Image (tube, rainbow, N blue to C red; front, top):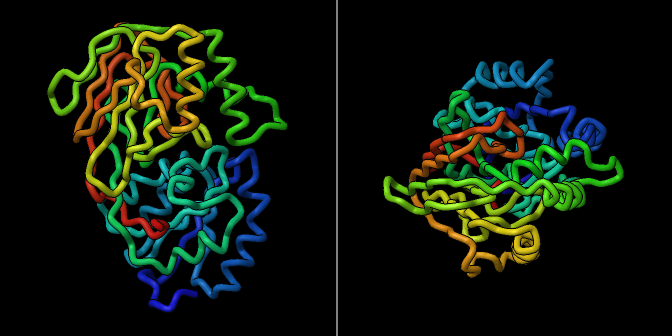
Length: 303
């Protein structure tokens, strides 16, 4: 294990059996062997549902850290027990997208790297709080409205042979056929930021979504700033061209893209618009607000 003493007394492993279409559960024996080999003091926090997992984490003793095994959605579900509590969080990416962990350089199946980082001192990491018509949500990676939320919904019907980035690409090409543009007003820190037609708005703490699309390459989850990235009114060919730029993180210089940083964003659409939080699809939303929570999560998995 790491040469420095652990910052936690024990480790609660929270594994999402549905993550990665069952990958997390299939990989558990190998992960458990790696935990034992490193002599980490752990327990598997068995839970019947996402709500049960959150409740069990909230009941843990103060010195117990959490190891979230799954994807961005698994982590997002646990955030109410982590934000502002001082409880440390470690990540083992075994979900479909793994975008926040991927931003940190963690790769699915590389348990040596993921577990080695548990010896790090916890690093204060930003989070997002979103208020919308359905209530309130905490996010670690980010949210999307419009095209990318339509893509997230279509990923559910992607061919089973595809995984991660391939599923996103299939869904993105499918969503192009149903591209919708609506009027949107965006305020950043209380000031007008954009008012006009748009097909997508992303508010990000992390840099990427969809298993590798670098939608917000300038994001830094440790800098005390959130990032907003949106596309103006785009035709199907124009959006396809822009997607290729997103793959190479070269889209922010495009005149059709608007990007900014701040502490709070408010988004108001003329029509209810497809929405996802950390890849989890919601009912279409007309308005929401996002605020940055600086250093709200104590992350063990930072590089």
